[in-house]
Length: 178
Ligand code: NI
Image 1 (cartoon, rainbow, N blue to C red):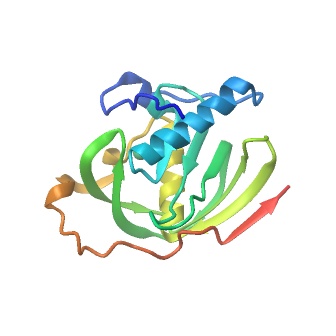
Image 2 (cartoon, protein in one colour):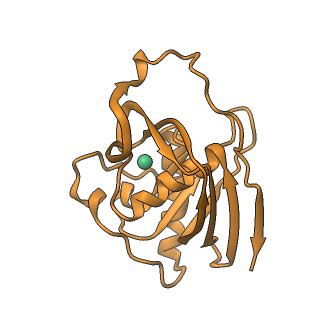
């Protein structure tokens, strides 16, 4: 297990375009493993490679609960094929610690990507998972959620814990291997 340093808002690397992964090398596999370790350590539900200082088109997501088995999704060279609808909900980011804000996003996404073995898949998601996917995807193009936030960022500690946390749509609607 290896943790990588998380780059914080203001770090120039977070605002750059990430490049595709050409080949899954041992170095890239280690990066993916380290990204998962770093995400779990930070109690995040998603992490993109630029957040650990690597400008590659990779992100990882795990929306499972603490008491559930880990269920990581790995997206390499993702390409959003379709989005639909609209949802409003709160987002945070490991690169913007302690903050939270409301962001409007599509409520559905269909995305193509490769897994860790460079096998291609198409995944469909809605609700929370669609939100997380689109948040992480933005990181690959140098965008952070505060750009899209509705209203000011709030301190996470000041937000009422009872605020309804959206539980729906944590699992993909469909995964098709190509
Ligand atoms: Ni983020």
